[in-house]
Image (cartoon, rainbow, N blue to C red; front, top):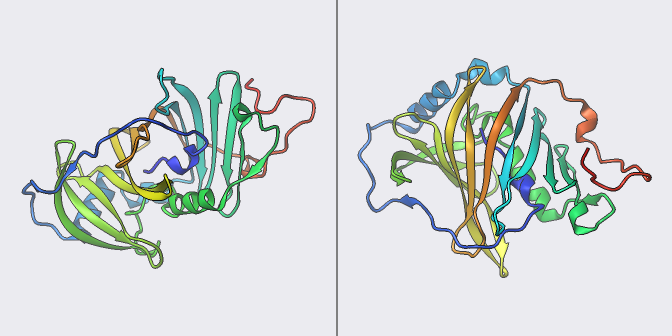
Length: 268
């Protein structure tokens, strides 16, 4: 399951990070086809029936955006089928909001002294749409129905774990890679959407760890996003709670309506 970091673009980061994938010393793993690896991944994370029964998921936890000194910012991320998501991030006494309804997106950034609802930029919409395309269950569940072609690249070490490297090619757009643990078949790493820094694109790597089962489905409780070859600090998400199939009112994914009498984004 991918917790979308496209939604955390409301914060900027600023310090160095290193990649942790090594292809030069590719480990030996049982010879499996891409289809077999995908099947093992789906089974290990809960199975097709459990994923098909998932209608919504709510994550609560802490975000460390790499600021110095480090600050743990509480967040709530709500996602439903239909590629809809709502992120609420508390910064001091203010709450930033970012919403994607499957086609359009908005953000409220009170910590920048903007007393208004802003429309997502074209780049933010592209990143949100790319992340949402995987829906709630990630790119490998029902990959053919999502229009993805999956092929086996080989094996690699990811932070000391022997992993299968698969390439995901959509009908349109650039291919990306995903690395699955050779024993557990959980996702260890996936390519993120490149970030434009200093006028040029930088590769993005998203690492997953600390998996726990929630009503039969396995979710990572730690996620780290690294912008390669840059001074951008890693962005880390820690999940404290996961709520499955909670009823979420459709108004949560509509353009925010800011009350005139209340300070914008003031946390309750």
